[in-house]
Length: 378
Image (cartoon, rainbow, N blue to C red; front, side, top):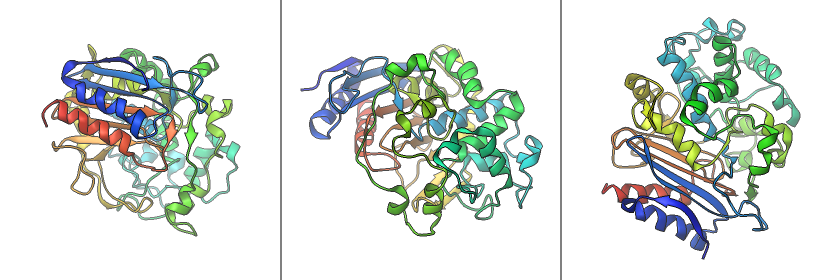
């Protein structure tokens, strides 16, 4: 039996049991899970191995690329600026980024970035794998790009572009890159070991992602579908996450590195209405804005019925995540997951290195979510 380390409050024994079972029954290699309640950690567990050969144990400070779970960190940066009065989410993007007002994007609003409804899920310009590391080239191309559908009318998952769109607004307003703003104004105050751009000194802590393969563009539609256009261009090769270039770059939609503890330390602020671990990061009203519904219907890229608020997917009948109305979430390719429940004041985070084929969540994370609700009697 795989040894699990860390702690879990006695009340949350179902989470520990489920986590242990994942190694025995669900092919887990290395992983971590964390749960906070009312702004304090009640579960912080890790176990297994951080490499495919199972030769190096997953340690307390192991971090891995969590892919799109990073998007919740990028969104929080913009929500924090809005809470401080430095950004109006309902203002045209061009107020902060004048060059963006090209090719019919004059009326695109900042909030459309947060709800994947800006019509900029991908780029028509051809990009090589290395071009993704050139921030200025990417944002200049996004400024020139014409929307693929009428902005604000529907969501279409901005798989790789969302982070650059949000990040350029953050850069124009603060004069800092999104990774720097996140580190200085969010991660550091909360003591969160989460990085959007990893320093080489931390490379030795990064776990190896173990992929099951698969082609997202083909699985989501292929041909000239929106999914194929979204994932077929402007995306790195399969070996990119192991490269120094990927690790050090700032790709706020996809290359955040952390573990469950660090994800929970950040997102507990949303779950606990603006404060967590003794830090008041934002106002209660600012945290509640996550639930300002922006779109509700079939996502044009993913083909799934999704309800988006400001920066997060929202609980719905089609995608039920728990018993309470104020539940927000997002997940990363391969299985990482974060769920915030403002009614229960609970945050659940799961991070792993064995990549499932799923783009939005996996049975391992959802099993832990179910166990957390069982623990609080819901």
